[in-house]
Length: 154
Image (tube, rainbow, N blue to C red; front, side):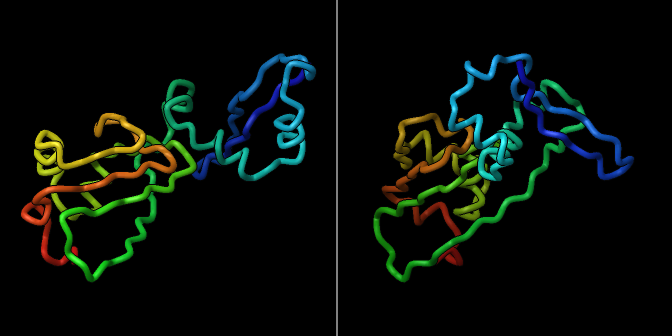
């Protein structure tokens, strides 16, 4: 039987807290590849579990809710009736699609919601715009979207 934890250290008081990933599980019941990743402290695997914010919040009230992220934009010189946004986000940190689109388009969330009601967004996979951001999400903005965004976006 094994336990697998992430060990968090408080920045303020330096006390530690164990986040249980697996508790009292027989080693034969764990995928051997995943087990090896845990044994090697594989960074990708650790970060995957470390950023499951909703699970963390259920176990600890002190989880920081305002996580910083970097938005990398590539400008296009062309103005067309469609724009596609590809989102790469390996870790779940609770960011909503509508909030991210508002930031990308440099508009308010209410404008994003208006555009969504007018069916100006096509999401692949087909998820509600109020869902959390997932890796490899593709959002196509179509129609008269230029009327909603700032000219500085171009």
